[in-house]
Image (cartoon, rainbow, N blue to C red):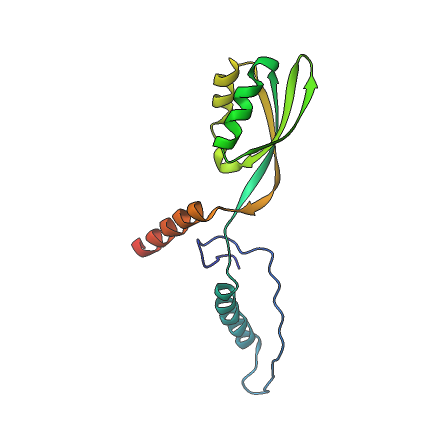
Length: 149
């Protein structure tokens, strides 16, 4: 489970049920059961249609009133979504969610959009499925890397 079939990422949130098994006094030992479990997992995980997950971050963005439109317009470009808005201290606080991969340069972008008068906080919200077009790129890069080894 530490190295999944798609991109070598850790496998999470699975449930496996063993319906049948047997024990033989000569052939059965702990190592045999571990090998059997490993082989069953490798076969079963591929048939279960696994997907890649990405971290989604919760943002609270504080901006002056004049820059709300620019900040709201930038969120969809980052695959993000504005969830709501509150008034605070002569400005607005936007509540949004966006994938972590899209936020690495957000401090610079927010500074640029607000003439350095905006600020934000970020915290982890949840994991969500990576869109298939991006997942395909990640999987292809992983396979290429594995072939080079």
